[in-house]
Length: 308
Image (cartoon, rainbow, N blue to C red; front, side, top):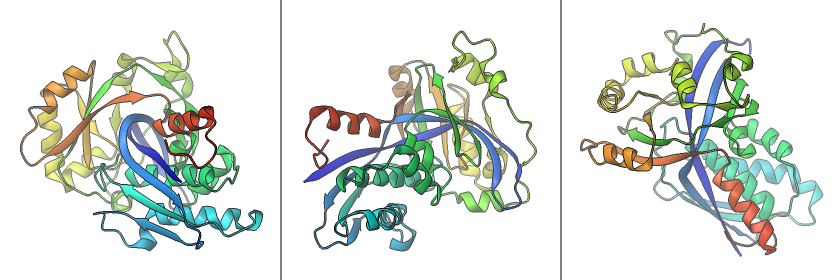
């Protein structure tokens, strides 16, 4: 049986780097906005008990492929509890640019954990899956939990947040930016003042809801100045997009995004995109498309190995 699930992109509407921790990680504050656009993964059981991954045109060594690593880590975790060694063949349909700061690899890994938990009937909780995912990357838990959220710590302390409905144009110049490279660079700003949840909620009718005006007042990305210095093409993309709406970097790069009030407004600007750049439009969502797909499978009563 085939199980097909989406792996959505994310944007960092706010990204503050507060300092470096003794363990080498950085204390962050960020607002993860999930999108209704991303990669897709297909899962099928492998009776041989092996894990194979077809990553298509993505040129990443198997030991560095987060999909493969997530599957192996989950299997190691559940192997003692299962009657037989689980196996799977996973096909990754890649739509998101590699190194774009929009969570492609992390989202793929999270969907792998969620998908194989379903396929193998592991019955692990979301908390357990998030803990497994965190071993592979700080961004993975937000995709496992599947909610647009305010994040603190290294990105693992999550508080679900409601944002206004907005549509986004995301631009990729083709630059692949290494997160590790950016966070190792001595020129990265590491002394931003922390925002409290109370400050986020101040003046909002719903204390867990952030209006577009509030987001625009708090927006910014501490990685942007350094990334644009290292990759002038990314600066050029931001300056071009700012003709139409406030634009900024997402994550550690290298995609630029801007918010629009409607899908039509975002598509109108997308149609003007200069040659050589790629991009997509998407709506911000509060609940991950992966969770919606899994919920649909469960409610249909088709069991644990049905496709979505």
